[in-house]
Image 1 (tube, rainbow, N blue to C red):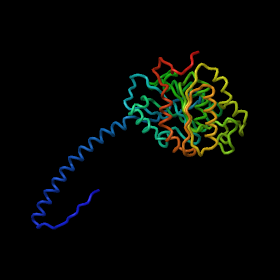
Image 2 (cartoon, rainbow, N blue to C red):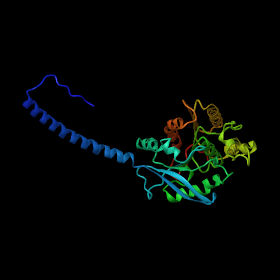
Image 3 (tube, one colour):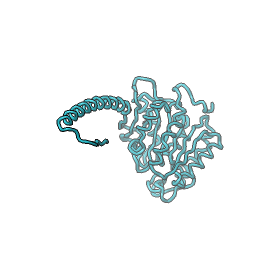
Image 4 (cartoon, helix red, strand yellow):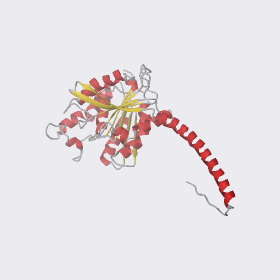
Length: 318
């Protein structure tokens, strides 16, 4: 915004003529400048919007129903080109697959990191998880993930179908599922991203959704079911496997129980020689925290991505 100020009047006729000439010159210049600016903005906008986000669904045999997912395709994606690394992200309880886009700002974050060459172009798949904690209880969600979703995505899109190009991640309830998948199927992923994972190694607090949704027990919460499905029960077997997944773990410092359990997981992983990174930032159990953690999380998690024929350098050999 600008102001015009006049310090002394001119004779009317001369003033009017000069004013008309000045206005005409100013308008012509403004039009030219606006045209140049619009053209420049059009180029930037085209580039910024070149990535795409779409909703898809398919019939999942294990669920005996159609299953929806949201997918991010990076700028320049070519279906007939080289296979892209693929990251699977699991949402939290009472959330949905689009939360990563609408609340986590995943598209703009990934676009910026790819443009700066801080991460490789990547396809990101976000399945609709409901409140099932990604285990085979109310529905066979875990079976559907491996037997239905992975083959569907690998058939429909140019993505890696080997562990060297496949990553897993999740937030809250999704962090529980991501850690479980990482530990039970380390042959399928090269790294994991755990944002405020609801992994309570003892029992979930009384306020946790794990006690309410009927997953861990037929009619009420059953601690035996919880412990059988949670990561400590998988720990020994995972540590005996030939692969160790680098894990990015993050949480908010006001999310007291979650960040304490996340810190314990990080410490135990490091003591066992498993690569891991921990970030505790200001905040609670909210998308403000998770979206703030996302750039560092993506960079760490995607660092393992290699051409499909190669394995991560830090993976122990069988």
